[in-house]
View 1 (cartoon, rainbow, N blue to C red):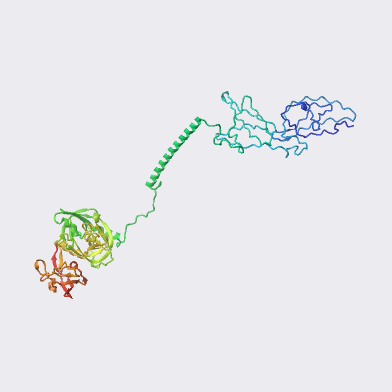
View 2 (cartoon, rainbow, N blue to C red):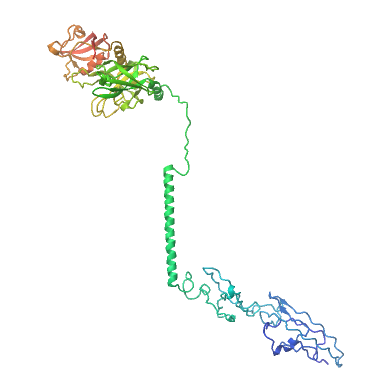
Length: 601
């Protein structure tokens, strides 16, 4: 008969080890703990109805990583005797093994042996929820040991901090996660070591984003006292003072840099592109070419007299030192004065008057002891046409070697200048060349040259906006109306002044009525002292001209006044034949005469 003992080999038990890993042994664990077997050599049946573990059998356990390791199989019992025959007595059980610390699984045994051998299933409880912990503003605390389970369902005790130097203990604030939701079973409180009191949890540790509003996280910890407030205010004042000083220093540096940049045009050197030097050559007919050719022959005159002084211009006529200029330039030194001539190169020399003529407003001075002079070539004023380019050279307002350019604006422009004495002896009558080349006080006596640097006129007068003509006294400056003595007239007068010291004037031998307001030049009725207005035996008397005749044309050119008639006659040389048209009793008569000569002053 079967006595209830298994007849085959013992079935191995692959169930999980006990869940009470660290629980003290109780009365119910006595048989398994001591390894005592019953008479049949088997341990009492366990709660599940399965055979117990033999004394020599190792219990299955779980590794610290949670892996399940089965216990080694127990030795097979000896074969049983025939039925009905009692089995021989088993040898005495071996000595009880010492208590071995067994690992407790994370969950209860699975009675259904779900592969892999009782692993956790969907019925296992979820781990407790751990809310994030913020990092404090003044350092990161050392995290304390986890106050929950050790991974096997057993609560782990806290680890005490190492004692600090000096024998004092340094307690690290125990870190504990916030309590889990109500649905999760609460963990056992973490026991505190003897003599250690729980420290107050930091404000950062108590932060709960789902909880009620609390003190702002920017001011964690306990409330601030009076000393803390004062310290914070003092530190804030120091920061403000430092910021103000830094701003002042930065402003000073920025202002200095800005001033340097403004004065020097930047922090780096600026180099602009520029063409190289050329050979300096210019076309001979250009203004630069004309000036370069004519300037060496132009001089500046400084005249000092007993009553007045002045500045003017002249140009060299020959290599003997003769210089042509205006009479009104040297007039202050005519009685007792001195004249200084300054050449274009800067050399100076004394000069003396050779001759002068107020009727033509021309004079010749001479320098001695000077060599290397550059005489200017003389042109022909009869060849000049209106619109021809011209260049004026002089010393306006004592600015020597001044060059201006323009054109011939008109020819045979009758002008009169002077007359300051009131008796008419200083009046100049010029059949002038008009130019728009700027001429100003100080240009008097300077040359007016053509495109080939030849002298075609002597600058003598300007038309000012505030007063009449003339180059001296109160002119407002050039307005583009300048007048030059034609060089043909200047050449004849200069030759006579150099040769005899005086110039001759062509005359017709009549006295004109200067108060006549009609068109033309009227021959007067009586001359000074009651004599006849027509000189007896003179050119006019020989040609049949009578008192009261009105001369309207000279050489085919219309005459509108007595001044114009004088200008037209003085434009010729003595001995020249002139054709005149006059009106007598309403009839036009043509006359021809030969000019006479008179000594100038």
